[in-house]
Length: 157
Length: 287
Image 1 (cartoon, rainbow over the protein chains, first blue to last red):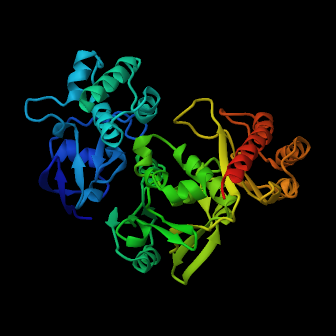
Image 2 (cartoon, rainbow over the protein chains, first blue to last red):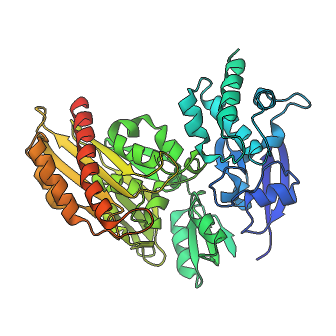
């Protein structure tokens, strides 16, 4: 089978790429579009390190085919900061030291941003449940939750 | 591997019939892509059904709802009408996977994957939902409990696929509930589960009951005698205990790393009782 020609929009930019039907969106992002911020942890939708939003919905990009991105809007970690200005969530992760090795961080930031867009005032329990699909083996999660809660407060103004 | 995304259900069926190799339907992909990654299946053809408009909609139908086969878990969870009509189905679906999985996973996929531990399947069977199937011989409707036939196998024929799921309207004072046992609070697979749907008279007497167990047999289990036990009662302790005993008697569980036969059997009765009490309370509150 020949490669398929896909037109999509990633972080506000129109993109076109060719991909094999079995390639995942994660592989397309990393290997074809050179957007290596999304990480492959498990590759089976368990760890959340590859989290992106697709048409506004939080998904694991390892469980989406690249061809499914046709005519869709994808947002990744690369689109989160505004130029040199970090998103409040990114800044709070630094302030609270909410990361150590950093592999899970892009996925958690993307997931947390999706939560705050849907629910600007989540309770701690809501944050913990929302992020249950993002595994972190370093931090023990507590600093992550604090950083998200703090960012939510700041973003509410 | 080939990938196609037809825009009509009939076209999907035609393509499926014409394929000699292994073909797989893609809706949410949360089972399919994992199975492909692990090498469990190597499809020759993937048919994406999300370009078919009717697979993407939740439509009101005579007080009930028609849910497209590609509607995601999070869309169902956010739907006010479904939360009101069948809270048990919504809570079952909401237990599946993480937020990320919820953004993609579908009821129809959960059904076709045919795991005896599938969360939304007992809940759908309890409220007498049915699947709308398109195939080479036309359309047909099938009861939910007739779709899974053994772990990982469903009753769909060559060329057939589910295009939507119908949840019929429920009488006044009706509701449902779903409970499962897992060792963790989140991100786990049911060791045992129970769905109960009840309809009451305005005085709180049970008029209709359907109790469906999950993960205690090769398929989900509609326990008819246990369901009948509740009819004509107000769910007094004696009736509940009899119903629970009947659930236990119906179990045909296995022992595996997640639970033993005796544990699964005993817990099925406990969960059925608890779910029945929740459904009863909800039904009483619903006019």
